[in-house]
Each structure stands twice: as C-alpha cells, then as structure tokens.
Image (tube, rainbow, N blue to C red; front, side, top):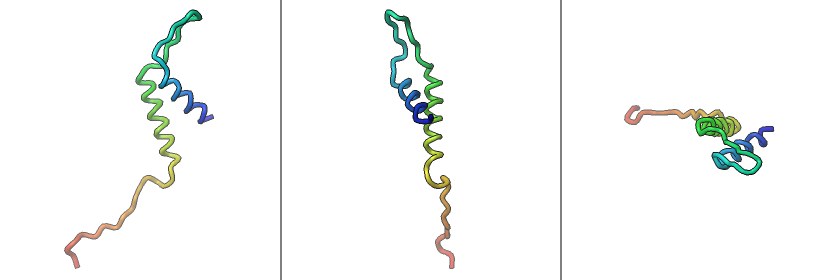
Length: 65
C-alpha cells in the first residue's frame, strides 16, 4: 500500500496543475498540500533508515593530563 501511495503522490507532483479537455477539467492539489506530502514521504523514508539518528562520541578536551 505504501508504494502505491508514494507513486500517487509523486505522480500528482509531476503532473500539470490544471488540465481540461472534451470530457471536462481536472485540477491538481495545491502546492502546500504537495509540500506536506513530500515532507511526509521524506520522514517516512528516514524512519526506515538503519540506526537511531543519534551518534554518541567520547569527547576529551585537549591539554588535560
């Protein structure tokens, strides 16, 4: 299901803003909605990535004994 949703959002973003023909006219989603959908897809992809997104490192200040 997620692949079909991803493809639908990508197709919607790539398509024209408005189209009309003999059968009628079609209008696409507004830009803020597409931006929100893109942010959703990016966060969904980031959540699938390996790791926790936090990196631990030991810091030792220079000049101490």
